[in-house]
Each structure stands twice: as structure tokens, then as C-alpha cells.
Length: 160
Image (cartoon, rainbow, N blue to C red):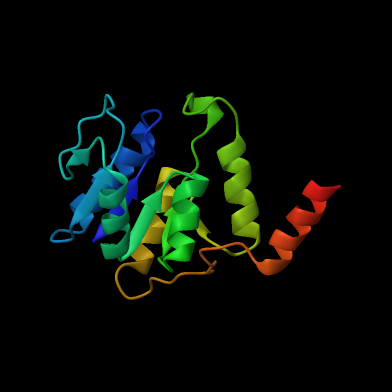
């Protein structure tokens, strides 16, 4: 199953449309798509506008691949769960967000080789089709909790 999530704040039609196009090329592959209601009407996928946290976690757990906006919540969840993730950041020039923080996040995590990043729809389609189903990989892993050194550093900062 491929789990696609755009977040719940605003529509992300570019991501929904390319997910729909990818689904057309992967018949028989189950797509779960959590997306804010948008103007684009998909023909190959079904949009789920709202998921409870439990439903979100269940879909994340069952996914073989996660395709997402560059939201830190989803990225961290994928890394904690050791799930392959490809992100496509929302961009200001398309009025998908109020600034370019998702692009900055994606660039930095790409530079660190922590996640796969697609900077546009064509690159996302190419990466999914190249990886699916036998070349999926989780590039980095993080723990559920902060490291002891980070916690101690924060405690020291708070005491000062």
C-alpha cells in the first residue's frame, strides 16, 4: 500500500494529481490518500479528507511507501517507523504555503540523505516508478524519544 498525505491545513492539488497519475500506472496497488478537499477531482484514487490519529498511524504502519508534503510530523513519523518516504514540498510560488519553509526542510533533509525528495511532479513520478516495489528503502532512522545528551543539554539551558 502507498500512503499519500498532504496534511490537513490546505489543499495540495499538485501532489494529489501526481498521486492520481501514479496510481493509473500502478494498477492493483492500493493507495490511501489523506488530503484536504481540493478542486482537483482524482479518477484513480479516493481522497480521505480526515483521519483520526489512530487511523493515520494505522495507515502509516501498513504502508510500504509514504508520499508526503514536507511536513515534519509526517517525516518524523516515517523515520521513527522506519518507512520509506518521498516528500514533495509545498511551494510559495504556487500559493501552497505562506513561505518556503517546506522547501528549506526538504533541501536540508535531502542534503543529509535522511529522506528522498522530489522537487516537482515529474521527479516524484520518476522516483516512485523507479523504486516500486523492490527498491524501497528507509534512508534514516530516529528514535521515539530525544537522546539523553539532548535532554541534559535542555535541562542545563532551562536552569540557566
